[in-house]
Amino acid sequence: MKRREFLSSTLAIAAAGLAPRSARAADGLVEVLLGESLGDIAPELHGHFTEHIGSVIYNGVWVGENSKIPNVGGIRKALVDHMRQLHAPVIRWPGGCFADSYNWRDGVGPRSQRPVRTNFWVASKQLCDAPAGPQKYDPNTFGTAEFMRFCQQCGSQPYVAANVRSMTPHDFDEWVEYCNSPAGSTTLAQTRAADGSREPYNVTYWGVGNEPWGCGGDFHPEEYAEEFRRFTSWVPAYGLDLRFIGAGPGADYRDPQISWTRGFLESLVARRPRLLSRLYGFSMHYYCGTSGDGDSLKFTADDWYQLLWQADAMDSLITQHWLAMGDYDKEHKVKLVVDEWGAWHKTTTLGSAYLFGYIPSMRDALVSAITLDVFNRHADKLAMCNNAQLVNNINTLFLAMEDRFAATPIFHVFDMYKSHQGGRSLRMLCDAPDISYGKGKTFWGLAGSASLHGKTLVVTVVNSHASDPRTVEVSLRGGEAKSARVTELAEADIHAHNDFDHSNAVMPRTAPATVSGSRFSWTFKPASVTKLEIELA
Ligand code: AHR
Image (tube, protein in one colour):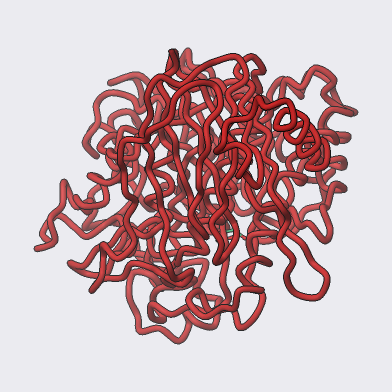
């Protein structure tokens, strides 16, 4: 519903004396349509990503068994504890670009005998200037067995990206064999047992390369379609339903690159239409970058709105790619996978070994909330989404340095939004005055998503205004609130953040909310993320 229509209907109700006092004072509307489903929110839409890049793995996830830092079998305990709290559904690994340089055999067998290899990212100037360390020369102490243990500890499913640029389909088959062949059945099953797991890992999510148009091989879409066919042909399944994810575009709102999506699908289908059935998901990457000086903590109000606007472009990118996919997959059997997303700032501030590592602020928290709301609203189209990345990198949930550890505001958003997982996404209309910024630019005032879980309705709303609260009428079409509680992530300063010395500076607050009936007034704080958990009558 457009704002003008909403205001005229509100005025008509008020004139008839029907509107409660609070509704008359409202400057907008949040309306949840309890009868209109947008699909089920797969928990995997709130997934994660860990690459051998900067200090994600070494010093982030992996600290080593003999470390003084609390760990479980070498894996940082604080990280696992937080991941369990999140109900983290899935973790992607080992890249990213690193995946297409990775020989999985380097990361199996006794850790002391594994080879040290030059990390893919050493080519970046910043890492090149860093002192020698595992970020530059990967000791392979964190390999497949360690990643699987990390997933098991977190209660998450593994999503493994294969190397298409520099290895063969045969190597891929054998990685699947190492992971999934039955206990005691093959030589690689014995290697796996020696690495700590007699039982197979039963990995079902397999990415077929990464960004093949760039670091993943500089392929043309037609060439990559050939590789996808070769890599997914007769892979040993061991009774599992293997889910292959084809590598799609690096989406950009200035240049949506639908050409990659179309070129790949056209080639795949042209060769043999049935090959489409090999494609469980088709991935897309989208990073919203900063304007201004590119520092995660130094920005103006205009930079704030511009980044939120760029994050919100995810909505139309999903729709555009979904429409293009529908031209080749009429029944939409193939789902979209957004396996890298986040706000990517230009300036690394955590140190040269922390490539793309910096401290996220409330601005990044709102980017994340906006993005998760977009995913919830497109639940019918998406199979999985993975924030880039989990720790010490880009849109990071955690900062970890030696024995210091902090959860960022992005973590708190994921923690708030976990209540949506597994729910039925509902249509929700938000109407509030647009905000003007920059030279003639505008951005919406309120947006969010809603999901139903039995008699519990979860509503999340972002108030993007940097300084103004927004009082609106909340309307539940087709239901009534009995009781509710609210969780708010809101800070007076849009630059607020957590760091090692102030790890609880930004924290959400939860309290009972006094709401009842099918219409009530609610004030959303400035620059905030709000979750209402409403018990329906
Ligand atoms: O997440 C960092 C990098 O961004 C990934 O390795 C690559 O896939 C993307 O370009």
